[in-house]
Structures are given as C-alpha cells and as structure tokens.
Image 1 (cartoon, rainbow, N blue to C red):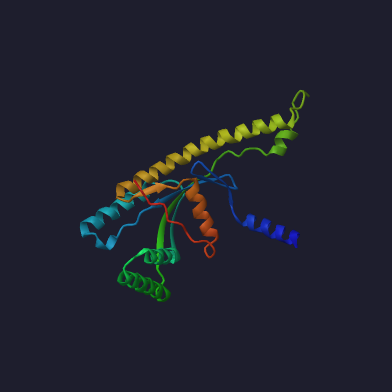
Image 2: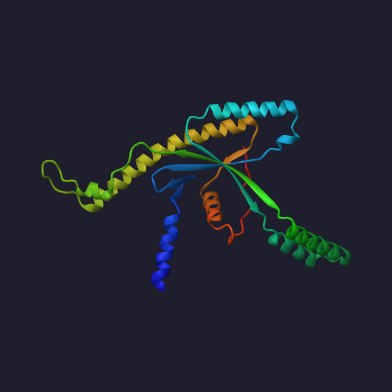
Length: 228
C-alpha cells in the first residue's frame, strides 16, 4: 500500500511541469523561464467612444511591438464566501443591540441564499512572459565522463558538481536578464494603455499555481492587488 501511494505521488509530480520557482520566475523542466503579470481589468463598455478608440489603438500598438511568445489567461473562479459569512456572524456576537444582531443575521442568510442560486465568479487577468534559452547546459554525466585530452588527472566529482552548479547559475542569470527585459517591455505597454499591472513574486506564484492544480480543495486567498 505504501509503495502504491509512493508511485501515485511520483505520477502526480510528473504532471507538474514546474522545476523551481525563484526570483519571481518559474523555471520549467525543459529549462525555459516564465514570469507572470497580473493585470487589473477595465470596464470597456462604460468608456466613451473616444476613450474606447484610444484603448483599442493602444492595444494594437502594444501587440504589434511584441516579437516573442506571450500568453494571456483569463481565469474565472467561484468565490468562496464562507470566511465572509463567518466574519459577519462573529460581528453579530460582538454586537450589543438585538436589532443590529437580527439585521446582521438576516443579511448573512440573504448572502448565503443568493450565492446558492447565483454563483459569484471572480476573474483574474494574467499575462505570461516566456523565455527559451538557446544554449543547453551539458548533463552531469557528460561532464563527469569526459576524459582530459592529454590523460591528466580526473577532477573529483564534488569539484565537477560545484563547477556545474556555478555554470548553471551563470546561465540562469543571463537568461533571467533577457526575460526581465521582455517583462519590462510588457509592463510598459500595459501601463501605456492605462492598465494597472504587477509582476507576481515567489509567494504569489506558488499560491497561483497551487490553486490552479487544486481548484476544488483549496480556498483561494485574497488575490494580490495589481499596482503600477
């Protein structure tokens, strides 16, 4: 039974394509990098015709200036109001006035009944910026298996591993600099359109992906507010 659970856990991990999250960046198992920008929405229908035309033209200019892969995600999720209802009832217990206690309870019941009949959805707008490195770091097996041309001493495995790690970190920093340039370009383009945007940090990325992989079992925390 324990062996079966271990195999199932291994299979689940194989489905997750993420190798690591660090420095506001998602490192995918194939070596490519991702940064995620959360974008604030805008009520386009409430804008005047002139404002709509300005936004549309700005968005066209923004798209025409992009020469690298870009992914736009609109994620809709049902809002969980259990904590909100619990806070209302906790407030009711603290209230001294019986009239206010009844009003708070009636309001809580109204919200519960409304949500049962009408699902309240929350939309999150995300832009994923990608970078695929051109160079590929040789595997550790190739590095440790390579023999010196003139038959010199073979380096100890610990030293080779350390050099391999240093080279990997150097390449990561170079690739991250390229990704940061792309993300900066996208941020400037979104701000020029009049949209608020922020790059998600490590903690927010972990929360985002965890919620994506566990939509039914995890109550989503408060979304990080988009800011300029």
